Length: 163
Image (tube, rainbow, N blue to C red; front, side, top):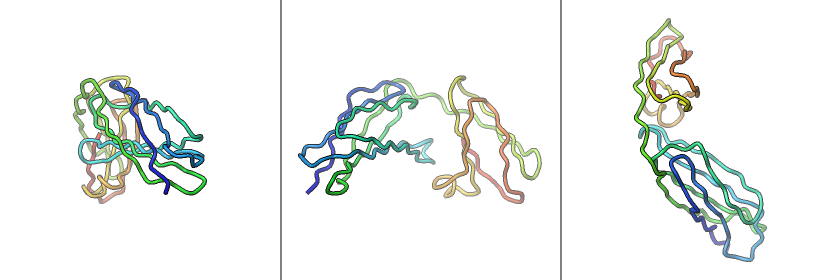
C-alpha cells in the first residue's frame, strides 16, 4: 500500500506559504502533484496546480491574498502508481483587502465597460457569466492590473460580473 505524502507547513505570511513534502516509505517517488485551492468572494473556487519533480521538496507559493483560507492537497507519483491524497489547511496572515466596488456599463450590444475601486499594484480578476451557476463553475475571466477594462460579450444576453 502506498501511503499519502506528508505535507508540512514550514511558514506563511500575508502573501505566501512555504511547505515541504515527503513520503514515509521506501517506495521510490518520482514527483508530486499539488493543488492549492481558495474561494474567491464565496462565488468562485480558484485553484493553482504545481507539478514537482523529485523525492523531497520544499515549495514556496507566492502572490496569495492576506487573511485567506487555503487548502493544499498533494499526491505522490511513485514507481508503483499514484499515492492517495493528503490535505492541509492554512490561513494567510494579515488583513484581507476590501472587496473592490464594481460598476459595469454597457457601451453597446457586445461591449461592457467595467470599472472598480481598490488598491494599486495588484492583479484583479474579472469574472463574468450569464448565470450564477456558470459564474461559479466556469465563468469567462481575464486579469488586469488596471482599474477598468472593456469586456466583449455576446449580444442579446444578460451578464453577471464579479471583480
